[in-house]
Length: 155
Image (tube, rainbow, N blue to C red; front, side):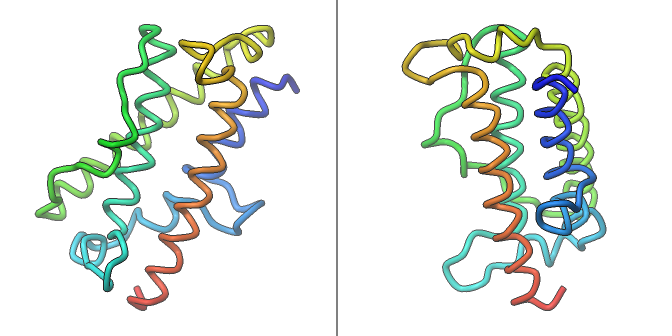
């Protein structure tokens, strides 16, 4: 299996369908969660919906680099989202999250191996490999938070 295919598989694993590292994935944690639970604040922690939207923000940002060569996301905006105010909004968001993740995984799979070592938009951001692996690791970090918040809420 090529490195590109391995990376695509790891992305799908953490967000869509895996259980190898954490015995769960983001989709498994939030797919059947009521929007009121997903938006419930626990002390000063981010809500489950905010964490999911945050991960999605980076998925879309990296996907856009593949699509148009531009990095249009900024860390300072990565937690700024309109409130989810209904089950329908929560489900629409999730569908977009799953679709964007799958599209990004497909782009990564098709990526020539040489491109993994090329600059990601600009030399200061490192190469494609570092950014893709970083996004996967970052997603696992927030998956852990989501799982812990669910346990606190008992959802």
